[in-house]
Length: 296
Image (cartoon, rainbow, N blue to C red; front, side):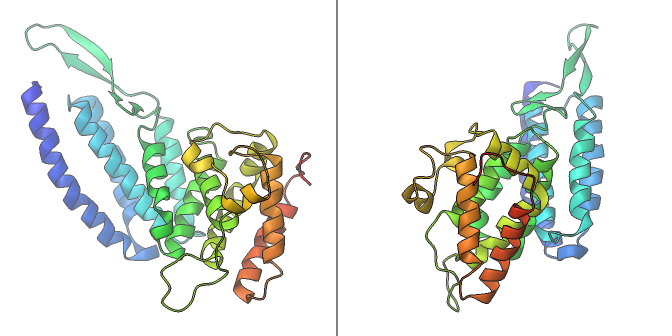
């Protein structure tokens, strides 16, 4: 395939991508009854076939990958946090990673020479590196405060599931730190007034609990290890944690874990019933976790 043909194909796909994402959004609007699980499965098979049997340009495959992860993210937001279809989404990602690195046979235009090349995008090898997955999930989570409470909780549950089983190592752990900072380290009202446009603690505690429910041991291990290899925009301390002089820098740490626990304990005694209930649930999970030797 010559360069011009490749560029034309890529440009045409950009136009198709807009329509594809609108269709995904429409299907996701059906909530737990959406069929995006089927879309994900068929997309993976079709993409794998195109990657190894044809010489589609890598720029084209990159666009397809972004659309695939977009479908995963929209499906995860739509499925309830406790819907087993979320587990199926995680299974799909684990299974395609196990396909390893794809290769394809390429013939030189002016000769009979044949060579084997790795299917490599700018985001890594397909599928072994799960190209662009971390980037797209992080970008989606940066916008989590603009999501509904249910969508935010559901997406958090999906990301937490991925983090718990070590998809992309610890690269998704920053999403947990951003959650804890927004909910427990940032000054907010306990609940919002009718018609409010700001985010309250009560809006965010369900998201905290989704992380604790599905990735508690992972978060505890990272805290014990004082893991700090996280993008600063995700790992920086919130205002309340800074005032408490928890640590000098962001990332995970035993002291930061203890601060979250203390915040939940304080919130569990507040006079807002729903906030107190969510805080008690989170506190219970933290207290029943494996022992944190460096935490108070």
